[in-house]
Image (cartoon, rainbow, N blue to C red; front, side):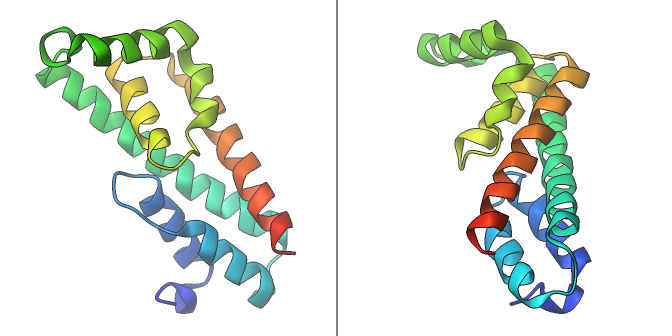
Length: 141
């Protein structure tokens, strides 16, 4: 594995990259490290969760930047505007699902674009990431 020689830094980088618009496989790295690393499961889960959350916040920032250049009302179709309305309606707590493949990155992007309240949104993002990595960790113990 390309991140194997980097240890915890590799896990962090894999998780960060996996949570931006680029695809990644941080769950595979985590599962591998659980079986090969001397680090505790909780340490591995926290490192992966922090990296993945920081990647999501990066995607959030890209959403903020995009909103300045391309206001939603002028760019999106009525169907896409309806999806944004749903995210607006549920607020930052919809970001508990930011761990979902494909959809999660879009939720973080929409959160930034819509300027959802940062603190509750980031708590929701981090909580979702921790729960997902805990589930992965316990599946491979």
